[in-house]
Image 1 (cartoon, rainbow, N blue to C red):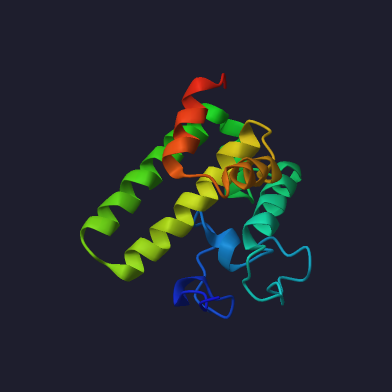
Image 2: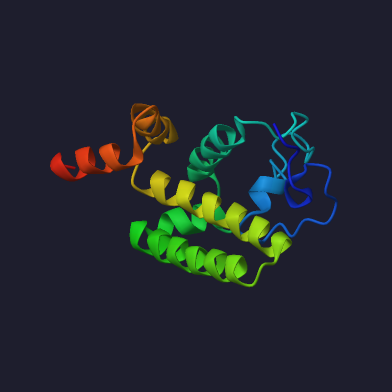
Length: 150
């Protein structure tokens, strides 16, 4: 597996705790573990861990948690924010800025997980759906999706 991009490495020092993706960089921004960074390296399970952290933010104060603020605003606000991040990701891709694209992709994934949480859809359900599509031709899989009800 390729190493994590510099913008996602846990040893990054400058963290804006009010930024939407601070949760990716500083696992416990409100200090439940003394403010220490998660000692585990960024690996394939980072999205599962982030989904669990987002779920736990439902218990936090909206004044201390951007994630809680989004969840309290409801699925419509979460969807709007995801759309904004998707647009920013496309723009970053079109201007060929590797760093910007990496950061926008991280924001996009974070906001997707927040939207899923706002609709009470588990990340594991999304992974199961992806798993069910593995090993199929993209065209055959797409045809199967359009013929079955959602």
